[in-house]
Image 1 (cartoon, rainbow, N blue to C red):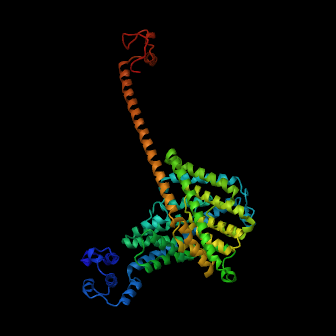
Image 2 (cartoon, rainbow, N blue to C red):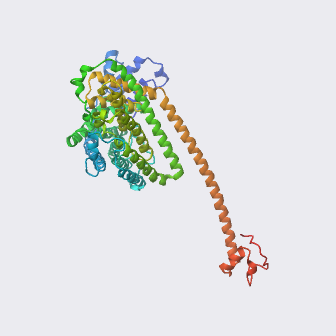
Image 3 (cartoon, rainbow, N blue to C red):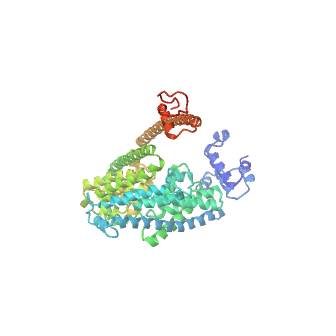
Length: 596
């Protein structure tokens, strides 16, 4: 019955997998777990096409437990199947395309932002970072005009129909969960994200790249009319190709998508097939970007202690640092919660403004206000501009010159600019700015304690984003592979990231804050809708009254044919006795017309 109810091998495999997990009905639920495993391994073998399905189901299952375990571990064969190579060729093409797209995307906004921050082609900003002179009030006031007009550009572009910008952007997690990205919306999202980054807004580039890559995969799947499973795979490979140039090594983009797929409840059916396909796309795009740009976008080699840990710093390792990493994880979790609270406050303010101002007005006005605000902050704290990748190396290299006070202030100002940028209409992600916040915290911890900087910075760098981003292995990989850390420091980094998540999300604090914020916004939205409905009701009633009055006036105009406008005004205001020849009626008493 199982075989007859499944039209193809893929459906058969999925049905059998569900049975093996205990979802195949009462008979399966009461059977022995070992029998489930045998059935799964046997039917997995059937799906690979070794024997006919009907005959094989009737045969006696394999008795050897070790053989069954090996079959499950090795999985299904895929390298000789046409479906795999179709997706593989698509992944190769996506890697080439997304490599050049990422090259143009990154170089575009990086060149624009460096140009105006450097005083239109000068080296003002770069020199200020290298000699640690961009301290409090070290910016230029005309920067505010640039950020404000950039916000105006973002707002106006959102209203252009051809941009097709959505009312609410989904983000990378939702796109991985749905395994579908609207190809018509992705270019507009990428354009506005590029403009946001070029204007110095505190947003990350990961959202735009994920949308572009996923849209390319979705478009190819629909264009080639691929089966659903291959369309999903094409979407994932597109995202992997887009993320390849973003992170220090291509393995991290594959790892990121795998973590997000598991969290989203969409784990891949065949893990190694997924690794091969996404690995092709991410490696090719990473190679192209490296070939022309010499390094990936998140270049951590500029941080002074990169690669030193494997040569001489390992001699200084102390086991107490592992205990310190627990404390750093706890503090990083608190900083992550503060960041989310600031983002929630800014989002609430923006939503209230949208309800009061209307959609079109708020779409244009909010980015203008946001650009003005983070421009003002940038004049006093110049290191807060952008996603933070430009400033990471110089913050660590000159930590002592910056000083504890300025770094603490910059860290909290970065939280505010991130909240303003995302809440007031600029487009981008939050992972890269969170890494910057963590780096500042690591430098402060180094200056305030006797713990070396090559311990504090990597731990805080991953602890702050790890407080609310459940991608611990990707974050650890960014720090470990980007900074080339040794095994001892890697243990500290890993400890700090899961301690941070336990502090923020593991305790349920973030969930309660998000739930209360959502309930409050829902209540405000309900009140707004009720007030709007009452206002509309009053308006409709008034319009009905005006329509009735209009009908009466039309009757008056019909009965008063022949009167001049002056005479008609006199009659309506009770001055009919002044008329020499009244035509409205025999009475000339001085009283207002009942029609008025």
